[in-house]
Image 1 (cartoon, one colour):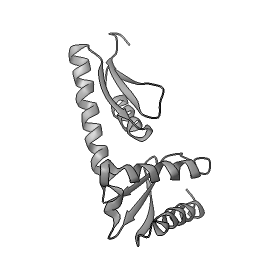
Image 2 (tube, helix red, strand yellow):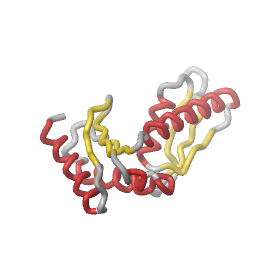
Image 3 (cartoon, one colour):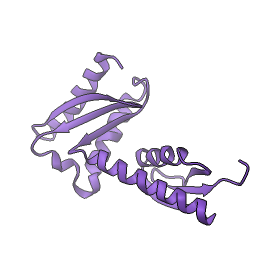
Image 4 (cartoon, helix red, strand yellow):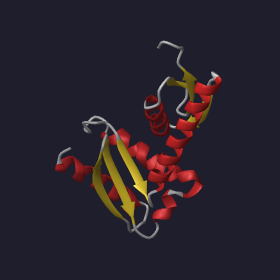
Length: 153
């Protein structure tokens, strides 16, 4: 990704945190499948309160604003490494449920999840043999159903 877009992402998030009256540092770094925006400093914890609702809202806002400009279309906003920890936890849960679906033959559900969390689950399940996942529901928050693949598929 080019430095100009990185600068725009950084300025956008900095403007939001400034408007919130927070004195925070914003940096942008590449990740395997997109861009990670890291917010740091005293007061950053405001984003992780109430199950990180503010962090989710900011990430949604950033993705909506930059979706067309971002070549890989995946932007993660994080502070206090909250997302890193939650993403790892979600991946572990998805792998556990995939194993359970494989062993029992029964569909396993996880959710309701926002689009970001569903993506984490789908990617984790895709890396597992003999299982697949599908989102279910018609709202912003959806459930992911993990099922064992039929033999020979």
